[in-house]
Image (tube, rainbow, N blue to C red):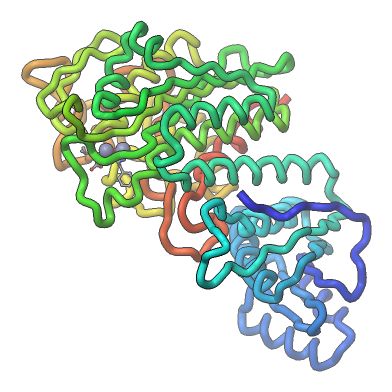
Length: 483
Ligand code: BES
Ligand code: ZN
Ligand code: ZN
C-alpha cells in the first residue's frame, strides 16, 4: 500500500495548492479576487459542476461546494466522488503537497470529502519495477489538513479507518502465489500486533483434531495447508455483554475445484475470494486501534480451492464440524463448506450477533451488481435497520433478500442431511439458507460477491479490491457500542 502522509495545521499557507470545501458556495465564489476567475467559476457551478479547479501554474485552487440537493448521506457520497476526481487532478498537476480546508460546512461533510480523497490515493504498487513501460504519475507526498472545527482525534480515527481499508485492499489484490492461507493468517497476526487485538491461528493438525470437515474437504485438493484464525478485541470498557462475532470467507483462490471454473470473466478474479476475510480482519484493526468499546471476535477459515488427485469430488459426503453431513454436488460451492464450520464454531461464544461476510455467489453479483451488498438472515429487525443505516452512511449499501423457510426444500439431499447447492433458482438465498443450518444465534449473512472486486476505475473505492465491509462494520459497531 502506498498512501500520502497527513499533516494537520491551524492555517493554510497562501500561494500553495489548496482544496476548499465550501458550505456556502456563493460566498466562496464572491471571495475570489479576480473578476474573470469569479465569472468563470460562477458559470461552471451554474452548469452543475461538482467542483472547479483554478490553475495558477505553480499552484492550484479547487472549490468544492457541499451539494444542495439530496439526503445527508447522498451529499456525503457526492463529496467522496468529487474528491476522487480532484485526486486525479492533483496527481496530474504533479502537486507534491496539497492543502485541504473547509469553510461553513459541518464536520461530517469535511470528513467525508477527506475520506474520499485519502481512499483515492491508494495504490497497490508492490509488483511495479523500474521496468514498467510508462511509469505511474507519483502520488502527492503530503496532505495538509486544516479543519479548524474538527478535533485531531477525529482526524486520526479517520486515518486509521482509511489505513484499514488499505490493508483489506492489499490482501484482496495479492495473488495466491504470495497470499496462501498461511500467509493470510500471518497477515492477521501482524495486524493484531500492530493494533493490539489477540490472534490465534489453528493449523492443519488442530483443524483435523477439531474435525472441521468442511474446511478440510475443500483443502484436500490443495498443496498448501488450511488455517483457521481467531481474532479477539475485548477492551475493559466494552459496552456489550455478549460478543459480536464476525466471520469472513478466506478462500485465497477459487478455481472451483473439480467443478472447475472457466477462465474468462470467472476464474481470473478469484484471488478476491478472501475479500470477506480481509474485511473482517481489517475491521478488527480499525476497531482496536481506535479503541472502540466493543467486544468483538472474528473468525476466518482459509484455504484455496483446487482440483487435484485427492480433491473432494461431486458426490462426496462430508461430515461437518457440527456433526451434520453434507452431500457435495458442486465443489465450486466451497465457501459455504468452510463457513459452515466457522459458524458452528461461533456458537461457543453465545454471540449477541454474528455478521458473516463472503464473496459467496455469482447470483448475488448478478442480482444487484457491484453497487451493493446482498444481506439476509435471522437477526432482529433493529439490527438490519441499524446495519442498513450504516450502509447508507458509508455508501456500502445493503439490499435485503427474503429468507423464507421454503427455500430449505431446495437443499434436501437423498443421502445426507443436506446438499451443498440448491439449483438454478434463488442461488444467493439457498447459499444463505445452507449457512443458517449451522447457526443458533441472531445471524446476518452478507454476500459481497458484487462489490468486493471491481474492474473499471472510476471511484474512490478503487480498481481491484475495494475493501468493502470494513467501513460498514466499523460504523455499525461504533454506533452499537456507544457509551
Ligand atoms: N467465489 C464464488 C462466487 C463468486 C462469483 C464471487 C463471482 C465473486 C464473483 C463461489 O465460490 C462460487 O463459485 N459460487 C457458485 C455457487 C454455485 C456452484 C452453486 C456460483 O455462484 O456459481
Ligand atoms: Zn466457488
Ligand atoms: Zn468461492
